[in-house]
Length: 132
Image (cartoon, rainbow, N blue to C red; front, side, top):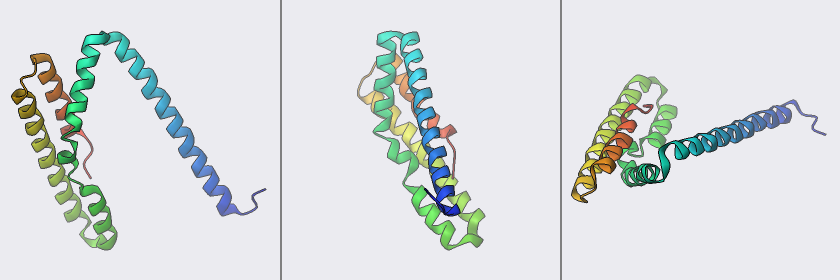
């Protein structure tokens, strides 16, 4: 079988990642089923529409900063605090811009009040997301 200690560690790490992914997907599936049953067809459809509409503006919230931030943190570890602070501010302003654009898009598209409220809620959740 596998004789190297390094190979065993890699396989053990990969198996933990696989188990974590399967468990996460299972929890998401069960949660989604319960939410769909609780909300019913109409409201669950509005919720899915709202999250899909917010997804159109999601690139504004992340602003593609994560990859650049990781690269610069590796390249300049002594500037860690400055880079993380700048990244957090860029993501915060991007999330605010996303909320504004998604809300304006929903209002200009003349959506009903429930859908607009769900869009504002779904886009505002990005403000509470983890920063770099």
